[in-house]
Every structure is written in structure tokens, then in C-alpha cells.
Image 1 (cartoon, rainbow, N blue to C red):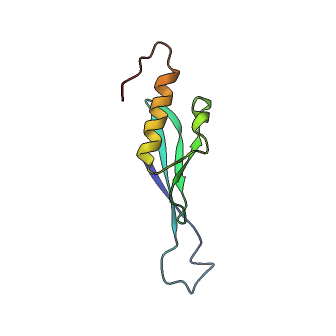
Image 2 (tube, rainbow, N blue to C red):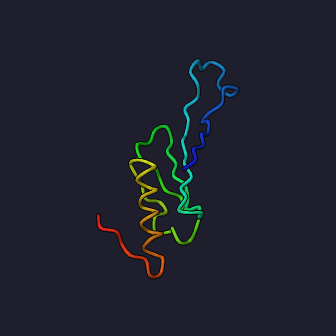
Length: 91
């Protein structure tokens, strides 16, 4: 998982603000060598939203997760289920 941070707002547009601008956070989700998608969360949101980067993971597109790790686990399970001849692991 890789983290990206984006800045919301701009100090140039709001010179009176004394606190740093709120930040959105995003993480890239990879399954093996495949980029499954990313999850992002705006500063005012509680959950991370999955954005699919591959048709194989479209079933997760738009789903919300409490943590990036939960999204990664869901992507890994989906990737495992899609592999021909893959065995499922007991929970």
C-alpha cells in the first residue's frame, strides 16, 4: 500500500487561515503485481472509498471500508476467488 496526500483548499486563496489546510488521504491497493485500485478519504469522511483501477476489481468500486487494510483484504479475497483453480482459505 502506498500513501498519497492531497491538500484541500489553498493558503493563497485564504490568506487569513492560520492552520494548515485539511488533507485528503489515499492509498494504492495492490494484489500481487496488479494495481487493484485505491482508497481515499476526504478530511470530513469517516470511511475510505474504493476506486477500482482494474476491471477485475470493479465489484469493490464505490464500497466503503473502515481502514485501507480492510480494503486490501477484500481485494486480495476477490483476486483469489477469481483465479482458476484457486483454493479458498478458511476464515
